[in-house]
Image 1 (cartoon, helix red, strand yellow):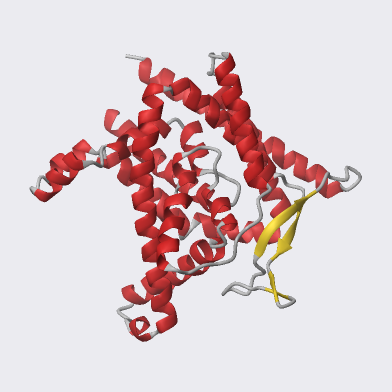
Image 2 (cartoon, rainbow, N blue to C red):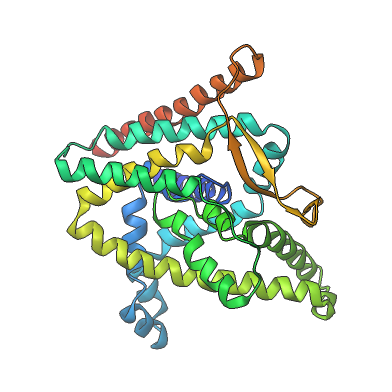
Length: 341
């Protein structure tokens, strides 16, 4: 029975990685929020902190098993396997639903974020003045980010590396959407749409033992871009986790208050009722490699409650809240099960 529970925990951890990877790709949604609500955020940060000089020495000395145990390898492997798999599977399903049922997808995520605010805040019992100020500071930063204008696309490899460092913030800092930050930096379509789709096709070619892409300058350009972005993400993930781990140890309540604020402020980004502002160059709407119109930002508006679609959207908001409440009940049940002898 114990081994069955262990297998169940592994599968559920992989599923959490899937959810985090999918959330990271949706502009306005933070994979870090998924980690925080799903209860593995601090373990993620502290595990990434273990990727340090000691871990490097273990690798260089060929002590791979010790390295694996030191960095909590099983946990990290399952989480990142789920996140990586999600980019080529779940996130593509999300792309489809965003294309055809956009308002309902945004409504569901909006409800999930409301639920996550409740989920986190209910256990937060230190409402001191400095923590309340931290919450409002987080809200202000989240709202300010949502109204920034995006920059132009830039495929310089050093800038792409920097995008990786900043973009991975959505995985380590709940409420701060890495995808939306990439939109502001002008490289969302380049890095999370075109390059990921190109990489998928390259992997298919490699498994088919077809290496013709090596002679294709455009595909090799995308391979360099995704490689630079990946290296930046790895560097950013390790470096920010060390910083956040230090902050969580010294100012846990203040950091948690800021996170609550960030998540609350991100509601403006995920607001379901909005019209897309498309990227236009020389009077023409820019299309990505799949022929989709490139969205630059959104114009938000209040819903007209005389329209039936908006009531459906409200229903999906409630559905999103129920998902988080269900997760809370599962978490409480799982904890009570582990306490039993």
